[in-house]
Length: 316
Image (cartoon, rainbow, N blue to C red; front, top):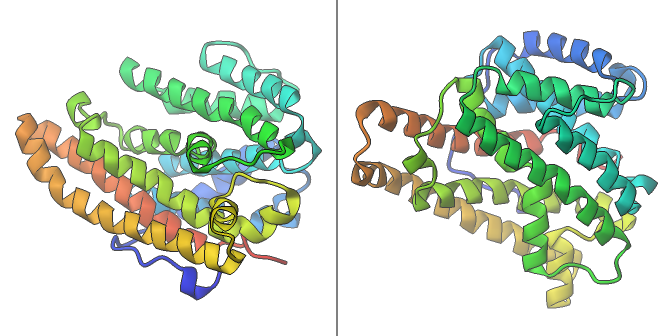
């Protein structure tokens, strides 16, 4: 992705000071759940700066919370990447894998011989520890949505009918796992957003934009790697087909759309105080709702900063 396609974002990024401690704990976790083939130092994974993404995305997280966030980031990437090869073109097999993982959400024991299952069981246990029932129910739904989206993505790779924009968004919002990432704002901060605030239209719009912007930016950055593999769930490819334009022009269109979405985020953030006052939230609930909104913008700023520097999307 060239500099002309970089996003100018209005929210400053911050970084948790506990990255070094979290990195050591994350290495231990990867050894316990060998999702990587070989040692981390011999893998491209070492250049993805996964712990730094966690530190940027959750800048207020303490040491143990940041380690959990880093483990989650590692799981997302390594679980998703297993479908880049032949397995990702076998939807029925992908569905069986994902059904087993979703079962863990509802009490099914993990297969001790499956690193993906033992890793996710550990993450789910740690994530839900001490969290209220309503949060756990929401988090379980969002994880199930994430897992259930992978078979459809696999089917798309072998389909002769690439998705339209609506189909792209429906699937991308599942595979991006952003709702599970946003649930962790509350978990790592040990609070729960008041229900009326969480589902208020203004905050819902902000949350959706904070979820979609990274997907659009990621599509531009990952296009050079995805286009040759036949991975069709990429907005650059869709725009290119819709407009009959070059890949460079399509990247510019997608970037401009993401930039407009960022501008809308600033408008929504400015509307939140009045929206909360209209709800009649008491001071304690106002503080919690404000922390959550700040968590959304912190994640967005941190992700975009990380994405512009990580080796994950750099062509060899």
